[in-house]
Length: 421
Image (cartoon, rainbow, N blue to C red):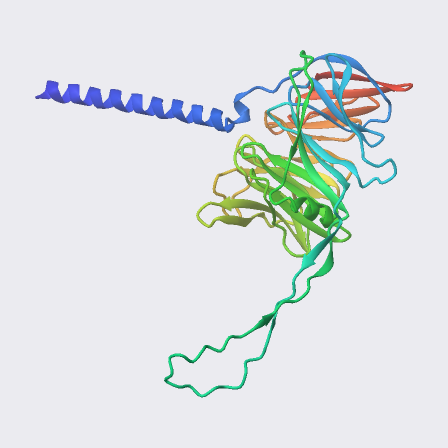
């Protein structure tokens, strides 16, 4: 009896092991198919190379995921430069040489692929349209009431409708259209051309809605779910918009809300933002709740000095800023279902400059990088390291591992890539 019981227990244990392993393998495969494999499983790519770019007025420089392409603006034209082959492989010019509101507005590399998403504004060819409108038909008043009889041959009284002539009306749309494109780059060793694809909105009128909202200022992507968030500002009014995978557009902002910074989860579709409504400053989160079939807003921190820095590897990083100095780094878990006012853990305390000329990001290894054009302050596991930057202009990759230094030389620019630390 004991022997049979031991055999039964062994088989149960073996069955559980196989079930657990099978479920784990299946889950990994599903994540790969859906593109949800956490980026933390893949070490960041670093390169060490030098190249010369034809041009000296480069702005808004961004390096690709694989560190082999640069995207930048030069005199109103978006250009993509192949760093290995040292040549420009793509250009997107503005449709106007004088109107600075047209052309490429904002762009961003995806964090796990050599794909650049960008927004492009152009004149609306159908700003004014003429439509034919039919007024309601005129109904002739009923004749005098006729006394009802039992005569079955008495005819029914028919109400007559008099047709009316149509009229033509002008309809006015937005003077501009804002379109979204995805530019897919081949391997940098290949000679094939990039694929520039228009991602049409549903409905198409969303192109007018974005343009009518004002100036497109901020743009972030939740790569795990392909959701996009953008802020559009017109004077003192700001709108927060979301674009889902079906290219539907929705508005998420509160009335009179101003959003200073945004960051998305690298695992879920959660948006974290610095929100200010009147005198109330908060770090907030917006999450789609499947059970409610709508987005839900949550408060992450009510401390008016707290600012969102970024999200990486399951953690939300928040900086406390006092008198233009970053004095504290705090974290909380990036969960699939967030709650109001989660516990915040202090990871570092000190003091480094933090103002409008400073940029901050969370590196792939959880390090916080706070930098201007000359100095990078790197906080790793509670320790602060200062790195002096040598180029005329300096840029750090979005994953925090690559330093890109630019030195102007006449009408060209020398670029050097190397690991940051």
